[in-house]
Image (cartoon, rainbow over all chains, first blue to last red; front, side, top):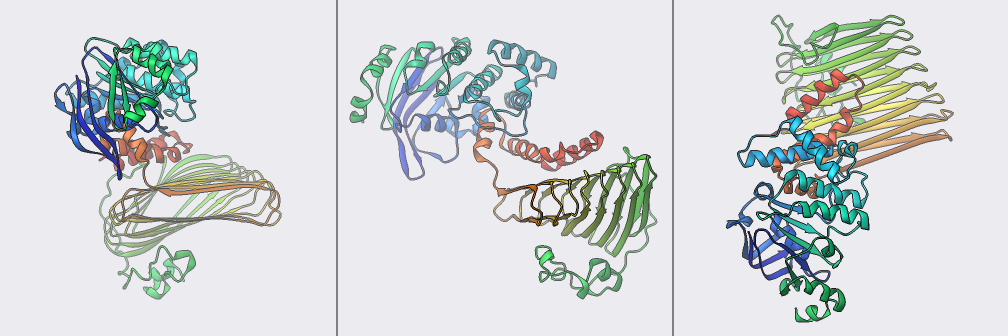
Length: 248
Length: 340
């Protein structure tokens, strides 16, 4: 599914990724853990095509297709979704309008038929109920005046509505209390399927109690410096990142 | 010195220039070397105006002339006022609007031109006590036109005046409103939107003078300038001595969408009274690139995402139009200009 090889990337003058290699097969959930400044968010932005993040070497493919050659919206239409660490506020655009515009743009890019208004509303009501989101909130401007937890829940709602194939969760647990964390995790787990895969980026092990990874990778100094099973996350929680920070 | 006098006398020396503080960003003297001949009278037929389907009374002035709209006490009407320029001549128009006590008027005013005309429109608007006027102005001028509209508005206590000026600019365009505000629970809304492309220029100039206690003024102007366009906002609210408990709010916010576009803003609050509540905000900046990336990450192509964010930005002004049908006309008009 996702294949990243020897990825080097700069932000401005700074070299952040320094030869990152990673394989996430379909059906699997991989966690990326690492100290602050290791390049975790940079990886998510490089994969999704944010301006200012320049790939200087290496590559990334999704199902064999070169991701880096595509525009951000084209990558989204291929099924790549990033749940932002700090979701943006979109003044003046109701959440439902925004999501419907996105869904139809993706469908159009894939030469699929647009979703009708009744179909869309039905789907939105169902997913909102599952995620315990007040439907009235979806009529308000997206994320404007929402709390940190509400914004994260809105990310998961968008994920549920857009039904992406490859999910990147960037620090999705930050700002969530324990109840919200459970709701968000249930939403994410509901999307697990044999033809989907996920990359869960997190600083803490806590989220991985709820979203159980198949593999855990340690990102330090711009590279994957260790990989293992779920036990690696527990080890990191106990021993910290010092050992890897030195290795990098 | 006035634009009307310059058109009448064909003396360019009468035109305001950059040396006039109030016109420094909309220099007509430096632009117009020779005033064109007076516009010929127009005998052809006109296509439909933007508000034709909404109005009950229709007033059309082509290449100048006078119009008068009177609304009797307690009466209510919906009037379209079309100011049309045909050809490349010069002309002036005069419009008088009187609302008697308790009268209500929805005024749907539009400007159109099809060439390098030079025109000036003078409006005198009077609201008696308890009268209500909503003035919606849609200015769709030719890129070679020079167009100046100057309105004097006199409010009375307990009257309500609301305006929303929406424009795509012209070679040089100025839409000016000067309101005398007596307080006495009268209210004024002085909104505007400019969507400028190419080398177009639009100048929103407003002056509201509060001379009595308990008056309200609320202003929100938003604009978008791309290419080499230039937007100008000069907003002034004066609160005279003794005009206590005045509540005045002014906001001007602009997006500059290219390196060569320009927005000049001069928001002014002049307060001589002690007990007032006044606020103003002014921002000029580029589009929020992070919001743009966020929308693109969700699958919305760049051009569509820009249009969506820009439409939402100015939509906050359009939403303040009271008359729903006109709001729809204006929203569609704006959306058409923003979609790529």
